[in-house]
Image 1 (tube, rainbow, N blue to C red):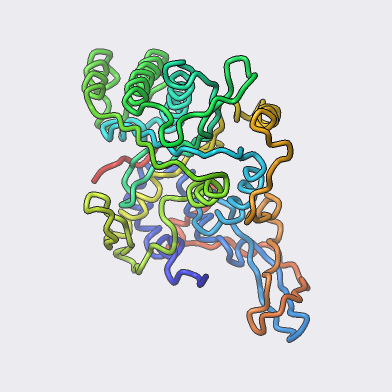
Image 2: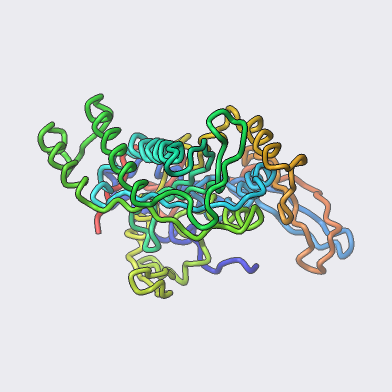
Amino acid sequence: MSRPTVEVADVIKLAGNRFLKTFAACATSHHRRILGNLVRCRTAALGGHVVRCGDCHYEQVAYNSCRDRHCPKCQAAARAHWMEARSNELLPVPYFHLVFTVPHQLSSLMLQNKKTVYDILFKTTAETLKQVAANPKHLGAQVGFLAVLHTWGQNLMHHPHLHCVIPAGGLSPDCSQWIASRKKFFLPIRILSQVFRGKFIHFLKQAFQRGQLEFHGQLNTLSDDHVFEKFLNRIVRRNWVVYAKAPFGGPEQVLKYLARYTHRVAISNSRILRCDEQSVTFRWKNYAAGGQQQTMTLDAVEFLRRFLMHSLPSGFQRIRHFGFLANRQRCKMIAQCRELLGQTDPRKIPGGSHAPNDVDASFAERPPATCKQCGSRRIERIEVRLHGPVITIQKPNLTIATTSVALSDTS
């Protein structure tokens, strides 16, 4: 695959300082660190190594990656490493894909309280699925699933939702048998939506009463008990969407799906068509128009504002496991599920790739697989280059460097 001609890093180089000047009041050190990492990624600033072809003796430099989880260029290795582990955990059953979405009226509140409210989204979704699945009227089983947080829409606006991938069935309450769901129906969507809404509002009220929510700017009035209660009453009347996609055929299809969804960032470099100091043009899929591919042009500062809206708090886990797939008991419970399903040996999913060790970016990346000159695979490392100077962005007084209020979601 050829390298994209325009990258997010190019937009940062051209408009990063203008962005920082425009949003000086709310651009945090976390935002600056992300911008700095992306613009230094795979450049001399992070160091690298020189490799030589054993056949034609052509030499090339391979620079280190920033390994920032918001970087479009650094997700392939992280995804491969994660997928390798998951390929050994999939069960020989169909899988369902559910999407839980909150009303857009909660967007500003979530942006000002990312960790608290995103945690509530995970907790609410998990408890909803476990409660409804445990009901004998629906499935009567203990389920296990993974959930992936996405916070963006195709136009880069804030659209928080959870993608859940879940085996079609679960363990009986005493863990003595596997209870399979219907082939094309997992759990009733209407009931999931109602339980999801009720639990989310409950946990949001709980966070408010404990003083865990912050209200800035236009949300200041929500700090009053009565105003917050009225706000929640309006939210309750909105549609809370739980969407069920068609079930997967089996573990191989699940793995291909996960490879596309788990380590995404707000926009991939391949979607950016062109940019200059003033504007950025990118491809997007307009679902309101039947999923048509269209182009959108934004002011470069607005593009960066939307991109950084989707930054996550440091240490926040955007991929989580629940039920019998929870981290504490996953190995034991998967083994029990396999035994009940008659799968004595873990099945290795074909097509999985091995990822490099997840080491710090200061260590050199693996050398290129083939020579750019002659295509030979006889590549050897001959020199390690240490970190180069920190790359600054245009104006020294506005350098983006490693030195969290969210940027507001305004149209």
